[in-house]
Amino acid sequence: MHHETEFAYLLSPDGARKITIAEALSWQPSSAHDKQQLWLHLNYQTPECKHHLSRLGLTAGDIRVLLSISPRPRVQSTSSRLLICLRGINLNPGHDPQDMIAIRIYQDKHRLISCGQRQLASVKASINLLPELNPCEITPLLMTLCDQLTQRQTQYVDSLQDKLSQLEDLLSLNPNDSLHNDLNDLRRQALACRRYLAPQREALARLGNCDFPLAQTERNQLKDLNDSLVRMIEDLDLIRELVKVNQDELASIAAGKLNQRLYFLSIITSIFMPLGFLTGLLGVNIGGIPGTENHWAFAAFSGILGLLLIVQLWLIIHFKWLK
Image (cartoon, rainbow, N blue to C red; front, side):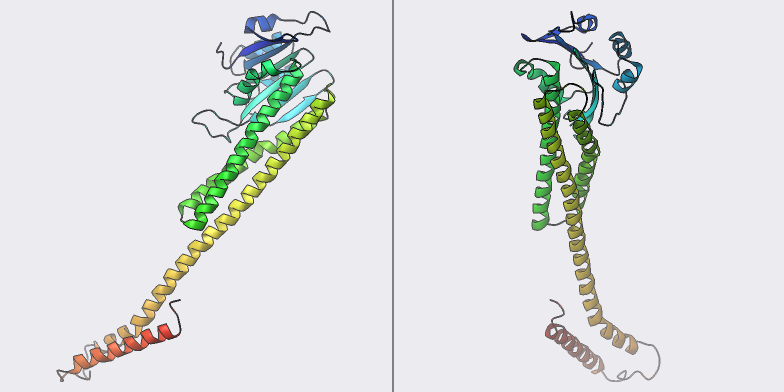
């Protein structure tokens, strides 16, 4: 089994000790008051994962949730167990951050069993923070994992805000059509992120009020995380609205440029339309056209056209039609 997708730790007052998957599957608390607790992380897409969960004594309903392919964030709780589905930012190379990674968690008094497939930075960070857990137990570990998930989500939302500020600066300095695509991408990223953050906020709020025994400090920590998610959702809504405002401004600038070009073309048309009318009128091939017998007629006609052109230009300048 690949060490990056499946691992196990035995937690005790002396600290966390890594054990094999086989040792984790056969581990049992020595008594109801045993201080040792187990964290087991499994890859839910391996063929043996369902067998492992059954061997650990989980119910069919809990196993179905832990093996679900694309669960939305939610919490199911009783006084003896927790069943949690959460989402974390995808920081894997070559992947979109808003393509959030699901983690499924089962917890009872002595075991925390998490299931996932893709690497999740929050899980790695939680492993690194195991020596700092005080007390070294699975419930503080769960709080650490929730905190790491929220921290990375906050950093991602902040990066979207920074990107929006950069686009606004570019819009004010040099508006162009390429910004429209960038704004669309930013809006899609904000919508994709909000899709999971809204139910995740509800899940953490429900976790903070669940029947499972949690210390008051842990409930307060969940409340703080819930407040952070509320702020993130508000920031994402603001990003979406500001993107719409900037898109409208960009469309207005483009429409203004188009109208300016059309106006300039209409001025050119107004200049050459009477000239074209006169030349067309005198160019008909019928008898009676004046000046056909005089060698100076063409020069005189050209002078009349030049004078007319000068009068038109004077009128355009006088009435400030080019401003």
